[in-house]
Amino acid sequence: MQDSLFSDLSQILPYLAHLEKKINNLRWLAKNVEDSEVEMFITFRDGTTFPMDHEIIPFNLQQEAKTLIEDSIDEYQRQHDNLQKLFNESNR
Image (cartoon, rainbow, N blue to C red; front, side, top):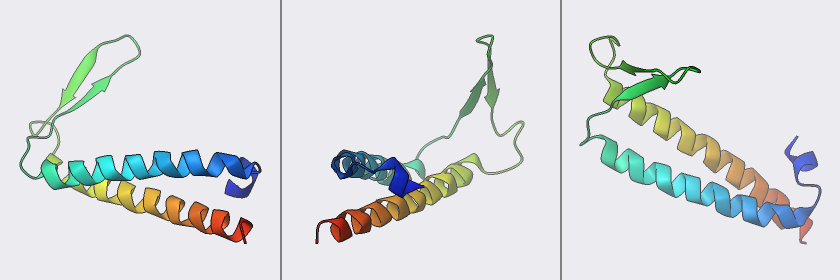
């Protein structure tokens, strides 16, 4: 699927930079989430917002957010590594 998305190899470098920025932002979040209070909100289509907090969610939101962030880093890193490999192989 990624091969067809990047049939024009000039598109890979900007996308790699975009992934690197996401990874760096998520790493910063992962480092700082432990000392923070995590709040989640759902905004419905009509514009109303509903808070999801420790009163409703029986899990540690801080730990759940950290897990989500770390899993996101892993996914973006995999995407980055695969695209970098594709780019390197195409430039041989």
